[in-house]
Length: 194
Image: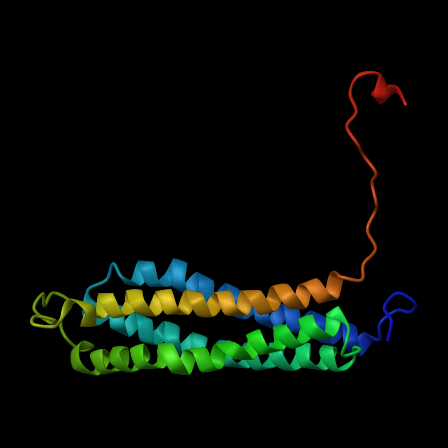
């Protein structure tokens, strides 16, 4: 199908929009959690901070995987409608791979930190907020705040993966749009007169 000679079908345009939007939502959600929510959570004492993180996890756990799968399927559909030698095919395949790529990244790098934070919640989640010794004797890198910091960093990497997917999907959606060509040149001296 050539976008130059005919208007793309509604289903194809819808799939492009869904692919961009789903990946962009996952990107925005994860970027905000890493840069907006977790830094605020880290001001709280460890027992409260870990409980607040659990709430963030519960919300993100539903949106992230669903958005990744929806974005990947949408971009894969758009790719399937292109010639395999075309740039649009290649970019949509890449967008699909990046969209779904957050799932193996999550299992490989984030789930181990999640498990540690869930264990912390069971261990200290019910402790009094004033209890300063709640994490006494715990290695610095294993404290709730250190684990939250590590988690937020990994989560931002996950956001960037989704952002790449959204960018690639958006690029393919607008790649066929015609632009205005402006010929401009700087001339000096007598050459500028024509």
